[in-house]
Length: 298
Image 1 (cartoon, helix red, strand yellow):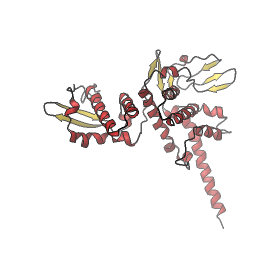
Image 2 (cartoon, helix red, strand yellow):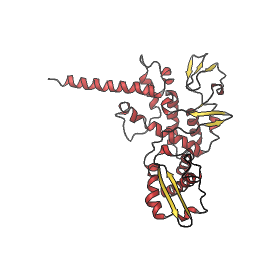
Image 3 (cartoon, rainbow, N blue to C red):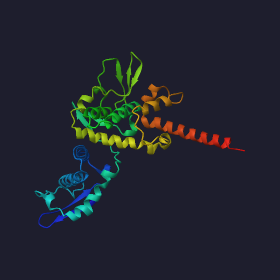
């Protein structure tokens, strides 16, 4: 956070703690950013709207430290801002919003029908959850008009209920741990890591900007995967059309004695599976280098 004092004689004098990264933004600010990105095509207008919203939010909200917030802003205060100070001191602080999305903080929990739904840290989602999210995320990105239903389906996958009793199944299914539950169909001996079909109707009641705010978090989290597992992603072709089945193919190639069947991989945590794939990719690269060394020996 960077404190900026905003002052105009006989008008106002207050200090605002400006965020300097996505993780310092409040949830309501992320939702407002999502709304602006969805409705305002002019970047300059988005920047001005964000500045006004962040100042109003942080100047009028109570501060846990007891300072810097709680001021009552005068009517039309925005019109009295020093334009030079805005351009020099304020606007540059918002550059991070447009340059790079490094949001890793999970969204706030949501409550539907007295049941609290918690977003899982990205490192804790299962391969099946990520597999389905990737298909829907690529479908969403390919559309010219934002598809609210796709965003609701992604959110329904990423948020888990606080109680396993909130999942109702009529096919002989059972629910285990609420923190990391697995559903087992006793008739088919088939494992599921989640059941979003009944949750999605709740998430469809959210606004488009609320759902897009969740998607912003998801998009950034998945962008971390190539940084965390560079060997797995090395050599990918750039500029090609995204393959919505790419991770499904990764599951198929990873199945075997070490990781188990494809269905067993789907109930693994994503980062556990990716770590195994990273080690395999490193080992394959070492073997290839050794082969080249032996081949080139005189």
